[in-house]
Each structure stands twice: as C-alpha cells, then as structure tokens.
Amino acid sequence: MTLSSTAALPAAIAAPGYDRQRLKPRIVHLGFGAFFRAHQAIYAERLAKDHASDWGYGVISMHNGQQKIADIQRQDLLYTVAEMDDSGWRGQVVGIIRQALHLQVDGLEAVLEAMAQPEVAIVSLTISEKGYCYHPASGQLLAEHPDIQHDIAHPQRPKSAPGLLLAALRLRRERGLPAFAVMSCDNMPANGQVTRNLLCQLAQRQDAELAAWVQQHVAFPSTMVDRIVPAMTAETLRQIEGLLGGIVDPVAVACEPFSQWVIEDNFPQGRPAWEKVGAELVHDVLPYEEMKLRMLNGSHSFLAYLGYLAGYAHISDCMQDAHFVRAARHLMLAEQAPTLQVSGVDLTQYAESLLARYRNGALKHRTGQIAMDGTQKLPQRLLDAIRWHLAQGSDFSCLALGVAAWMRYVGGQDEQGQVIEINDPLRERLAERVGNSREGAERVLALLQLETVFGRDLPDSLRFVKAVTDAYLALLAQGARATVAALPVIENTSEAR
Ligand code: CS2
Image (cartoon, rainbow, N blue to C red):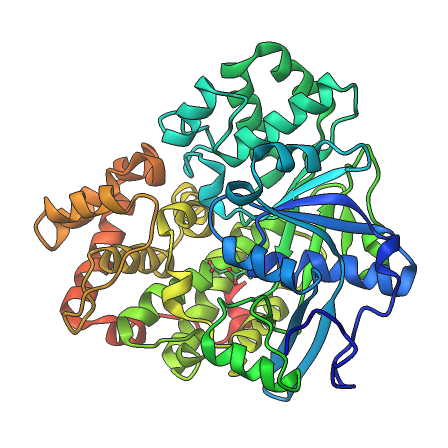
C-alpha cells in the first residue's frame, strides 16, 4: 500500500483535512531534505490546517535526492512526519507540497519557471553549509569552486545554488516581476547576510547590473532553525510503516517533538503568518543564531567527534556516560554561554533542555552523521567562541578538545585502528595534509594551515596552537573516554556563569 490517498490511514495519524487545491506554491524551497520536511513544512501545514492559509510549497532538489522527488510525486505529494520520544510516536501526513521538481530530471527550464511564477514571494533554502560554495572562515565566495567557475562562464545554465537563485532572479527582472525574498534555513550565523554577500559577489562576476538590482531589490531575511531530525534508517522506516498500518512511505521522516524557528521579519512580498504557529518573528536574529550554533551545534560536534572516537554510535549513547554529560554542560555553560549576546533567555535552562533532548533514546542520531562536513561547521560552532576567549584571556579547554577530536577523526582511523570514512567537501585536502605529516604535533600544525577553516589568525596564536596540540596529544596517549573524564569541568552549573 502507498500513501497516495489518506483514506486508508489509521485514525491515530493526523491527515491534512483541508482543501489542498486552495494552496498555491507561494514559497519555493531548494533542498528537499529531511530537515525541511520535518521543520519548515510543518509550520506551513499548521497554518493551512488551523488558519486557512494558502501558502503552499514548490520543492526543488538540485543534485541528490532524485529518488525522493520521484517517490513523493508517486504519492500525490504527501508524506509522513513522526515525532518520537521515549513516551511514544505521533504521526501526521503532510499535504503542504504542491509541486516537486528535480533539476537533473525535470530540467532547468521547469525549475526556473517554477521560481519565476508571479505568486512566488519567497525562495527558502536548506542546502547545508557546503551548498553555499563559500569559505567558512571568511564567508566569501569560493570562486575556485568548479560549479562557481562554471556559473561565472555560463550564467544561464547554473550548477550551483547561488547560480540558480541568480538565474531565477534574472528571469523575474526580465519579466518585470518583483524579486522573491531569499531565506536561508541553514546553520550559519547571519545566514541571510552571508547569502546576500555570496549572491552579490557571484552576480558581480556575471553582470554588474544584475548585481545592483539584487542589492536593491532582494531581501535576505536571516533565520535560526532548530529541530533534531536524524537521517532516516531502514529501521525507522519500518517503524513508521507499522505506525501507518502497513503503508510504506519512503519520504517519511522522524524527528524529536521540539521545534523552534526565529525569523527576521523582512519579506517585502509578504509572508505566511508564521507567528500564529509558534515561530518568533524578530528584528535581529543573530543573537539567537549564535546561541543555537554555539550551544547546540557546538556541543553536538564536540559529542560527535569525541563520542565517535570513544565508540559511541549515537548522541543518546554519549548521554549514558556521565563524564560526557558533564563535559557537554561545561562546554555550553562555561565556554560558549559567556561569548553570547542573547538577552531574555535563561542559558542554564537552555543547556539543561538541550541535554534532555540529547537523551531522547527513540532518536537514533548517529555521531558519524553529525561528524560530517566538519570543515564547514567548525568555524561557527567552535572557532568563533575560541577567538572570543583568546581576546579575553579566558579558558577554552573543552573547545580546544573539540577541535583536536575533529583532527583525530579526520586522521581517518579510530582508536581501534578501524578506517573512518571521511565525508567532507575538503576530503582530499584533509587526506593530503594527514598523509604528509607525522602523527602528533606535526599533524596538528598541518591541519591548522587550512586557511579556509582556521583563517590566518588562529594558527598564529601560540595559545591556541598549544591548547589544541595538548588536547590532541592527550587523545593520542589516553583515548577519548579518559581525556573527557579528565577535563577539569565545573560541576555546579551556577558557578559557571
Ligand atoms: C547537527 C544538526 O548534523 C548536525 O551537524 O548538529 O543537524 C542539528 O541536529 C540541528 O541543527 C538541530 O537543529
């Protein structure tokens, strides 16, 4: 049985229950991944259900995900979201998608046409950090990226996401249509600002007039997005099949109950009334983004690298080790919280709520998944806070251990001598640096020379180099579990702040 109709759904599964024909694809979303399906789509679904909203989605995948687009097309653009925690599962079928396209299958014309429809007011993105083709340390366009090189030479046949956005904006301009707002929903600080800079830099190299038009007419609201949505496994798919009474849904996603969305209110062509369904519309998102990126994503990466090395397959497994829990709490409260500017949030409570979310044993969030793409994640998750501590002269031992654990991880061998499959857009450069350096302090120095990750300032800081080297040597000598256990952490969190 497939999901093409909601008639056969068990009563416990919530179905759209509203007139889907009423929806217009007023938002086009690039990147039809699990995170979008469990996060932004759910806000639109609630609006359609409870507030008669007509904001539907057109979704586009550019590179991967052909199968997912084919699957959802086959099931009348419906899919399932299952919220899971230790108390059980709650499932719903989502009807908010009105169109689904794949660049490689449906072709560029169809994709551009979808983005150039007059009713499209917003194009949102979950393309992951690497999809922006930028230097993570500086936020500048990665001009040497092959797709960017291609898009500079062939603006009409884009391969990169920034190139596709520009081609669609060019078409709207030619047709005399207003620009859509471009809304990044990826985990980068000032994600709107970063996206604006990248588009303007690329447009400058293609067509200066278009660059000026983008500067003047395109809004780039920033957002902070939060929901833990692990990659699907065969086991979770089977569990959802059980929940659906035997209906197989290959597009289904499983996620935690928690969800948060903070959005900069900057949409010249209008926007859904997201505030009616729990999103926070604010003037300045950056303090929230930094809070989430450093406390949640920073501790996630810390747990992912150290946990993987220690033999913990999932984040919830790390939470079974009291030393890992203490270290994560210390990282959040003693080393990340002091660097933040957010006001009106109790950070001690925030840290405890994150640890509680990490304990969710129903979510099988793999440390190996979070460990992916470290070169794109380290700057905003660990290194920005380290710069703050270097300027203050304060301690950052946990942050330094996180960086050292990433180095140990990209070394490509775990503590049992097993090969680690490195998944990172800079994989070859990492392998070259690892291969050409001797294990130990020399390896640390070789990896610190990656300017696109560490900039020029960090490798020049003796304090930073020493802290990371000491942590790396401790990992080599004692292993991850003992190194985490030996961290001088503050037990009482109220002392930490
Ligand atoms: C995780 C994030 O994979 C990762 O890097 O840290 O996907 C994290 O689960 C989300 O940002 C939570 O909102």
